[in-house]
Image (cartoon, rainbow, N blue to C red; front, side):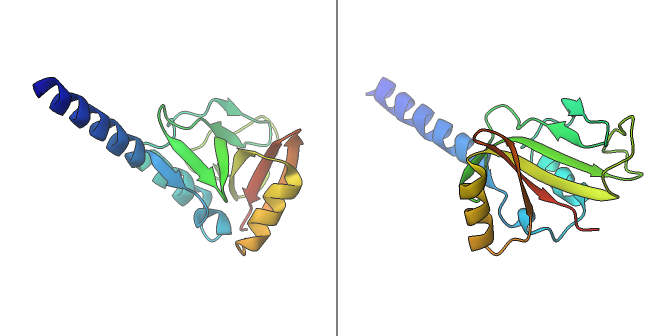
Amino acid sequence: MKRLVIAILAIFGAVLSGRALAASLDQALHCDRPAHQFIGELEDQHLIDPRPTRVEDNSINAFDPAHGAELTAFGFHVFAIVGFQKNDALFQKGKGKPIADSAYGAVVLGSTDSVTAAVRAAGSQAIVHHVAPFVTAIFCQPD
C-alpha cells in the first residue's frame, strides 16, 4: 500500500511539474510587445535556455526551449524561439545589419498554409514565413 501511494504521488508530481513548464505563446505572438519583454518573460519562467544557440548575421538570436518545456503557438509545437532588440544585453549582435530594432517569434512544426490559417483565425498580424517543409516561423516585428 505504501508503494502504491508513493507511485501515485510520483506520477502526480510529474504531471504537475510537466504542466508548470507548458506554455502557449499565442497572446505574445499578437505582436504587441518588444522583443526584450517576450524573451525576458520566457527566461524568467525558465521556459527557454538563456543563452542563444545561434546568432544570425542579421542579429536574430535563436533560443532552445528549456529541457522539459512544452511550448505551443496557435496549436503548433514550438522548437525554437527567436528574437533581437537593439542595444539590449539580453541579445548578441550578429556580423551584419540587424533585421530591426526589435523583432521576435517562434519556429513551429507545421505547414506554412496551416500555420497561416491558425495565426489569422486567432487575429494575429504576425508574419508567417516558410522555413522548410513543415517548418514555419511566426514572426513579430513591431517597429
